[in-house]
Amino acid sequence: GAGVSQSPRYKVAKRGQDVALRCDPISGHVSLFWYQQALGQGPEFLTYFQNEAQLDKSGLPSDRFFAERPEGSVSTLKIQRTQQEDSAVYLCASSFSEVGETQYFGPGTRLLVL
Amino acid sequence: AQSVTQLGSHVSVSEGALVLLRCNYSSSVPPYLFWYVQYPNQGLQLLLKYTSAATLVKGINGFEAEFKKSETSFHLTKPSAHMSDAAEYFCAVRGYSSASKIIFGSGTRLSIRP
Image (cartoon, rainbow over all chains, first blue to last red; front, top):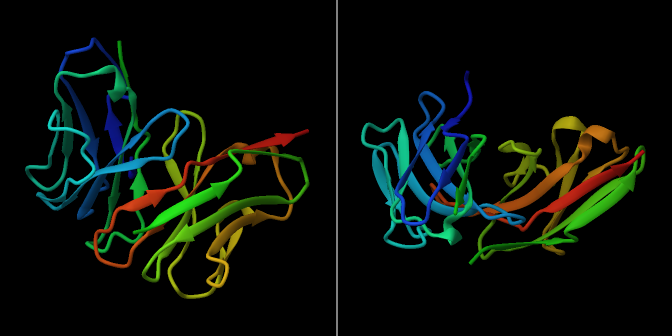
């Protein structure tokens, strides 16, 4: 498909387990964003990539969260030693230019930490 | 700093009635403003965006929004509600600088009564 895809769509993890969430942006899109959406809330910014460079990681809630985009395309958000408060939907978005005027969102990964 | 306030976490209207979802923003610079819609278990879909061109912005599915600088508002309207409009709606703001993150409101759930 031509849209942003994310995998897995659902993930159940035991507290303390590490998880990795994948985002495939729209082909050719320069900018990539990760957001965290808690239940009943709006999405909150986590981090931003321009090609392979991580230019803003101010929204990452702790050093347990790590994101990478090594080849400037696919991105992975990794959460180490998951906690119950990490339970949320993780949304990925991409945009064509550095300005990122219009961001196109993927369906999200719903993470549940037990 | 930028922020968005959505008035009313839940709005219910009858099918065929006017839809009005309220959004006020705070921004120290001319903002980009957005309305996104989210259907259950899906990602965010852009309804419309304001980028300092026309103050009345028309979007998809018959929605429109008017940027009022004096009121710092960007309310979303639709003349006649349809059952398929039932969803979560998010107002969002973004700064003008490149790669600015989007700041989302907390969302308004729109219900349509038959």
